[in-house]
Image (cartoon, rainbow, N blue to C red; front, side, top):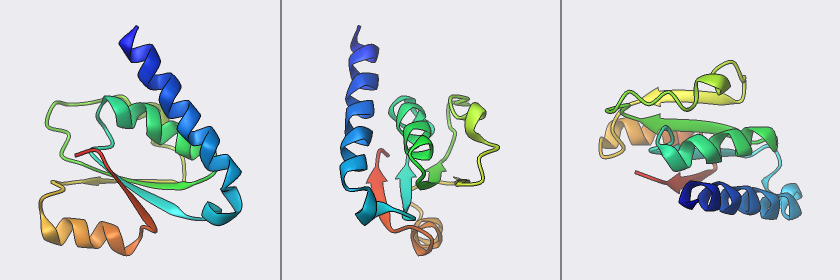
Length: 102
């Protein structure tokens, strides 16, 4: 039940973004910790709505929730730790907004 509520909340957030679509059109979101549970719901929703997404994750637990998205040209996967300043700076160069999940 709890997972269903989280998924529904994330879908609602993405739907809310649609009302601002002209502002965010063509923008790229950096999602730190994007391979975790919330990210595995949020990232596909962002991609579905036409946004670019960079996922920064260390994949410490072998997450596979984004496998169905890896062929999407709007998705970039960066393996690394969000606490690593060098890695984070590289990702931020390509991002317009950040969604911190890590």
